[in-house]
Image 1 (cartoon, rainbow, N blue to C red):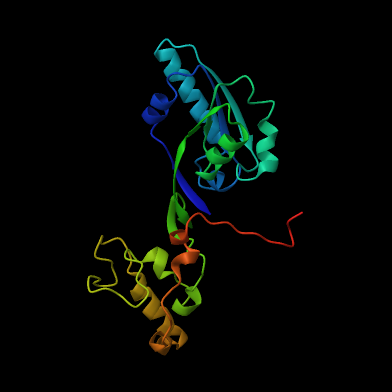
Image 2 (cartoon, one colour):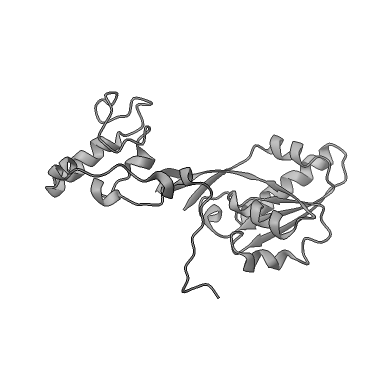
Length: 222
């Protein structure tokens, strides 16, 4: 899933200081799962904005709404009547959300209320870790189901660097060296020799290096 974190409230207040009618819009997708942009967080941010406005002696009307998803026009359309009285919208979805809202409602100022961090999952309660870099050509089956692109600090595909020690990455003692993990996993599977197989250089055009990406499923296009 997409992992995000709340923007500092000072930053949000500064962005929206010139607006007096603000709609806070959440998303029931990834950001709800990581406790950043669901209905609960919409209420918290809206209340915080009201309290700050009252403290500063500023008139402010704050609305609240949570969409099923902000990355789907079908659900974004449901804001058509709701958004009308507001002159600004704070999206607390991932970075896709404010862009979809901005494209659908060009007359409204749209502000991001969160910072999108990475694609990953929960490793324990309240802790999320990156697992995918969205390279467009998944190769984890070569590496014991582990991704060196996302989980190696240097995204090395040809083995560990010389900086790892004791199974840890040189950038920090609490960061596991994924290549140490890969070697151990392949040894466990009896496939360590797979690393000796020649593989051509990775085609990075399927990643962000090839420009903004788009996927078309012909069988689903109406």
